[in-house]
Image 1 (tube, rainbow, N blue to C red):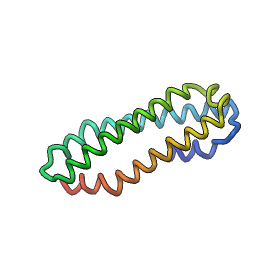
Image 2: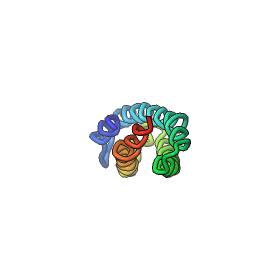
Image 3: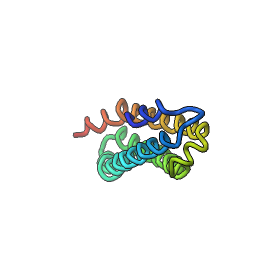
Image 4: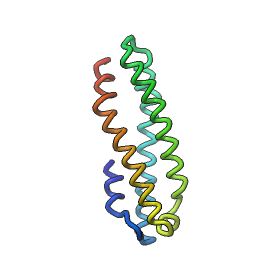
Length: 125
């Protein structure tokens, strides 16, 4: 989320091409981190929770898997829409609006994971 906060500080109706190039590099880094996070959840966390005898753990895992799949798809569409700094600077207002939306969705998801999902997962250990 630190990368999202850094990008948020640069958003606005006008974004220079130099700033847009920097933003795109930051987005690439964020994309890699989100992908790593998703892989960890998909390959380790969710399978463990789905095998649990705890109904709440299984139910949470199922719900979060579906939700994260939807959010991951939205994030991929966002990344594909903004493939380079030129696209960002040429459509700064639209980029700003979409960025705020996707960052807000990711922030809410991370908060819910930290407050709901991970405590249940930790209790299984």
